[in-house]
Image (cartoon, rainbow, N blue to C red; front, top):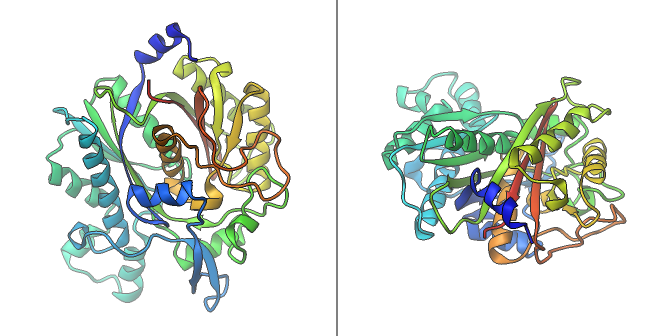
Length: 395
C-alpha cells in the first residue's frame, strides 16, 4: 500500500480525472472504447483507398461517421465536441459541479484535415464566411465554451504525439496556479486521411498491409511498427471532487534536440523526463507498478522505453501498450491511453493486449487486475518530444 505520509503529500498536489468521454475507432462513446479494449478487440479495419497506392486498402482505426450534425460539418468537430460533452455529463453524474472558472484545453496537431482538403481541392479556396471560420482550430473551442457558458481560459496545445500528455500537464498547471477551478481537456486527432497514412508508411513506421496484432507488437519480437488510428478523448479535471477515476500526481516533459524523427540513442533527456516526472509527483520510483508505455511497436521507441523502464523502475513493475488494439491515435494517443488506465482502475481491469510473440519479461500478457501502486504514462512525440505523467488509483 502507498504510505500514509506519501498519500498526504500527494493530496496537496493531485487533481482528479472526474469524467471521461471518447470517440475512437471502436465507435462513439466511452463504453464503446472500454468494451473494445477490455474485450481485446481490434479497432482497425481494412479501409479502401488508404494504401500506398490509392486503389489499395489499408488497416486503419478510423472514427466512423456519427455525432451530432449541430456540432459542425465534419467528423473532427463532431468528435471533439461529442467527447468533451460526454466527459462533462459523466463528471456530473459522479458528483462534479462546475466552478466559476472552467477552462478548456484542446490538444490538436494537424487539425481538421478533411475540411481543409475540401476547401483547397474541391472548393478552390472558396467558401462562405461561416464555412471558412469552421476551418479554424479555435472555432470548435469557442463554440464549445459558448454552449456551456464557460469563462475560463481556452486554448489549443500541440506537441505532436505527446500532445495528450502536454495538455494534461498544462491543465494540472492551471489548477495548481489557481488560474481555473476546473479544466475540460480534450485531445482530437482525425488525421488518417489517405495522404497522411501514405507518408507515415513512407517513413517506415506505419504498417498498412497486415492485421494489427501481426504488425504492431510493442516490446515483442517481430514488431514492424504501428497501425494508424483516430480518436477524440475528453476529460474533466478538478481538485474539488471525491469520486475520480484516477489522480494526476505530476509529470514532466523534455526535448531531445537531436533529430527530426529519431530518438536520441543516449536517452539522457528521456531518462531525465521520467525522473523529473516522479519528482514532480513527489513519489519514489519504488512506488511505480505499471508503465503504460508509448509503445508504438517501432524498434527504436520500444528499445528506448524498455531501457529507461529497466533502469528506473522496480523489479515488480510491469509494462504494456494498448496501441495494437486502438491504433496509434497520434495527437490524441496518450489521452486514449490514459483513459485506458483510468477506466481500468475504475472497473478493476487493465486492458493490456495479448502477447503474440516472445518479448520483454515484464510485459503484461493480456488483461490484468490492477495491483496496488502508481502508473507512469509515457508518450514520445515525433521530433524529440518526451513526456511522462504519474497517475494514482482513486483512494
